[in-house]
Image 1: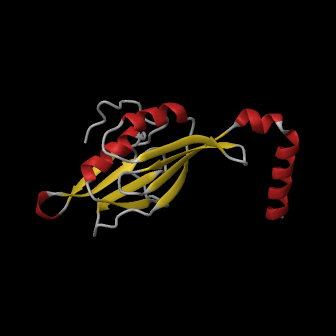
Image 2 (image 1 turned 180 degrees about the horizontal axis):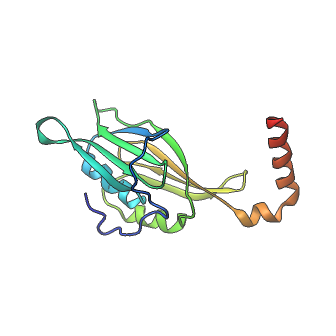
Length: 161
């Protein structure tokens, strides 16, 4: 797979091999097209494993450490329906949205949009209907609203205690 023309990757891509504590497995009707979509989203291909008859059977994608997606061939026409939220980790969500809007092969992009909990979310729906939400805290809003920040800290402290 190639990252052309999208050479901007997400910050902090870790290509180390390690036991993945969690990962997402999405079905894809067209593995190459869906892989290109995720490359535009800032993922890199760590591995592409062969499937039956020499076709690609699995594509292992990673965006940042512990942000792994395994793409496998769809078992039927109704692929999709998976959803995961990942920290954007400093990625510029507006630039990422622009990359994806320019990407060929379908899929949709919504946002980035503000949330009531002081983050911006970029909702990416791949060509197969799977959804990845990249979320980034709005630090300026969090720091400026000391009352809200105190309420969140108090809530967490009560839950942990």
